[in-house]
Length: 123
Image (spheres, rainbow, N blue to C red):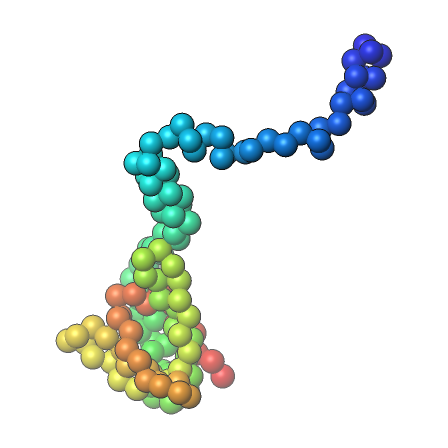
C-alpha cells in the first residue's frame, strides 16, 4: 500500500496535456457537430413562463394603474428563450393589434402583449 502512495506522490498530473474535446471533433461528421451546437444553444434558452389567470389580471391592473398615474414601469418580456427588460411610461394599449406603446427618455417603442410576463410599477 505504501508503494502505491509513493507512486501517486511521484506522478505529477499537472504535466499531462490533454486535448480535451478537440480530439473527438476530428472523428465526428460535420452534421453531428452542427446538431450538437444547435442542441447546446437550445439548452441555454429559458422556458416560457406559464401565466395563469391571476398573473394576467395583475399585469393588466399594473398597466392600467401606470397609465392612469403616468409613472414609469419595468416590463419583462420573453422572446425566443430569453428575457428582456423594458423601462418607460405606457402611452397606449392597442387591444386590436395586441400591442402596448411605451416611451422612455430617448425614444418610443412598441411591445407585443403576448410577450409580456411581468409588469412592475417604479416609484
